[in-house]
Length: 135
Ligand SMILES: [Zn+2]
Image 1 (cartoon, protein in one colour):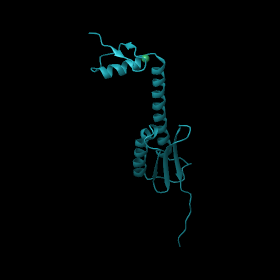
Image 2 (cartoon, helix red, strand yellow):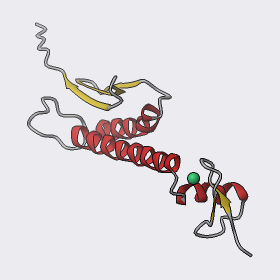
Image 3 (cartoon, rainbow, N blue to C red):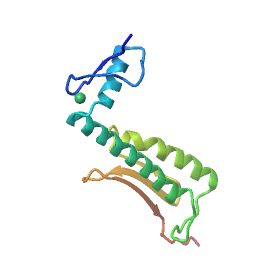
Image 4 (cartoon, rainbow, N blue to C red):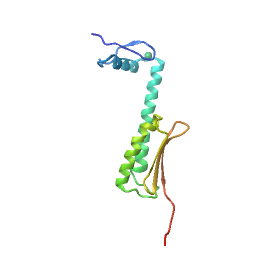
């Protein structure tokens, strides 16, 4: 039996790379394999989204998992671990526009993940520099 799928973008019949067991999944694969313009655009958008996810997760690791001299304030390892997992969990909701901004106060360090007007994902770390003396 020949499995066929229909590209959801152009209606072209395309053979999926295997039988995915349901018409819906076969159509999805057909759309993925189709070479029409809208399918290519969708693939590019998907790749861009994945790249943004990867880069945001890397930025979170760079800012919160490694203590460098730029970081004025050392985060307790346990707190860093919790903060990093919360920030990583926020990446997809922010990229997919379910959340506009997520901020976490780690005590001395604030972490923010948000989307800029240019559709970039922003990962911020601000270390407290306030000096306070109580006598
Ligand atoms: Zn197509």
